[in-house]
Image (cartoon, rainbow, N blue to C red; front, side, top):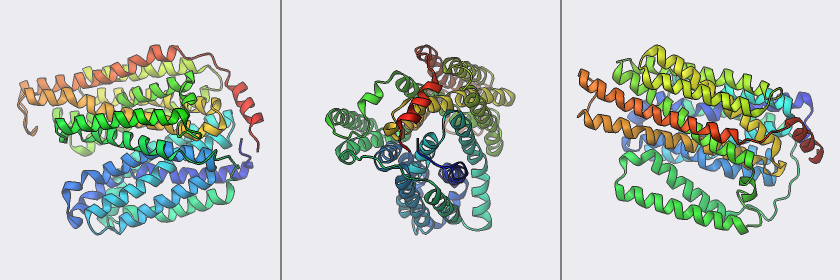
Length: 475
């Protein structure tokens, strides 16, 4: 356990929250500001990559940052990540054409991966179980605030100042976060064990990058391109695991993946990512196409899902120190399943709001508790990569969910002969409604599968694990 005095921990936490907020809000704030950037810079064929490049790099670099922090210390690697993020922000604001903006968003995303993963990792290291349960719940609320504040803030900045300040505004807050963590977080000395496994890192990055591109751009790719990306990604992943099996200092220690609790947590994050992120991707489309709601109102109806996640995370993380993990995560499956049933079968604003609240509650009552348990049980030298893998699997699940749920929706559009959805007949509404129903049932299936998986969780005494970790880790 890294020894950080109580007052200093509060200051470190404030800096970490500020950095996490910047990383999270960058996923949403650009959505309303970038149309003005496209008008000024041109190159609209690259427009989607303003968003995709950032999310892609945040996702695939997370395990790299986590493992580097295990090897070289949290403080050094976190500060490096903040510096990369601020460099990318400054360059993005100064971009002179769309290609430059996409490239600089890549840089920003690389740094954003560190802010996202290492915030949760550092909290997992400097706080003991009871405090960590409370603080990790607070961190979940940062995502909610960023999701709600981001789009209107981006529009306001673009309209009143300039779209460039969507990026520039990160700089003073990022510097403050950097200074606070640099001043008050002590860096525990670690053994690098021969340095980072560069061949493994290369093949992991290659495989996951191609897979994420395939999942996010599949609708625009030809069949041959999709097949080629899938094959190369699979081969690269096979090579990666062969390298890891004999690497002196593997990027992802294979023994870590054999731990039952972590493996269940990883599968659970993947499947819940399918259900949750698939749902929030297509609920706004359902509301706009079938009910004729404006985009602003359809976005507003996602608020209950964010609220449900936040409140459930706060409650579940507190309960974790009083009751076993298994009933908490099984309850999350009930929440998630009930919410998806309501959304699938009742296409109305009230149903979406209630269903979204339950789906969010399901997500909040599983993500944070599993994170806390994994951080309590893993070896401190593998805390960073374990935390990063949970985030990676959740995001990967989201990409898979978006792809899978689009299949029945696209089939319904084709069956109804729809090229545009501005005016729909009764028959077309019925067909499209069925497509959305099947889409949300895919999410429901992913959630239900988690129930027998969570039943395999062993009985855990987290207090004993936490005490053992604290006593075995030098200050």
